[in-house]
Length: 172
Ligand SMILES: [Mg+2]
Image 1 (spheres, rainbow, N blue to C red):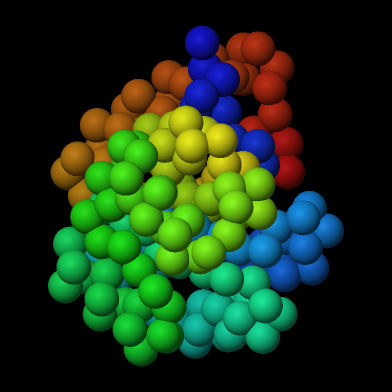
Image 2: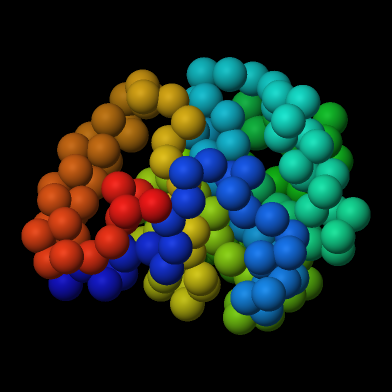
C-alpha cells in the first residue's frame, strides 16, 4: 500500500544529484521542490553553492523548473535571481502543478525526475504522474505548520518501510 509513497532514490542533499548521473539515467530535466529541498523553508535566498549547482545543471543542458506549494512572493524571490522558471502554489500532490511543470520543461515525463523532501506532496504527487522520484533529506529540522502534520505521517511510513526491509537514507 506504500508503493505510491516510495521514492525511486534517496539522496542526502541535492548536491548528490549531478548532470552526469541524471544523463546516465536518461533524464533531461528535473522538477524540484523549494522548501527544505533546496534551502531551509525560512531562508529567502539561494546559497552560493546552490547557485553554482543550478549553473552546472544548466550548462550541461539539464532543464529545471521549481514547483512549490508556497506562495508567489516566496518562490519568485528565490527563483528570479537565478533565472529558474517556477510554479508557485503548485498544490502538490495534485496533478496540475506537475502538468504545468512538464509543459514548462517541454519534456516527456520519462525524461524528467522529481526532486523533493516530502513523501505526501512531492513523492506521492510525482508518482501519480508516473515521474521518477528522488527524495532528499530535509535541509532543516524544523518545518512550517502544515508540514509538521505531514512529517508525523511520514515517520509512520518510514517505520513501515524499515520493517519491510526497504532501503532508505540510513543505508546510504
Ligand atoms: Mg519541501
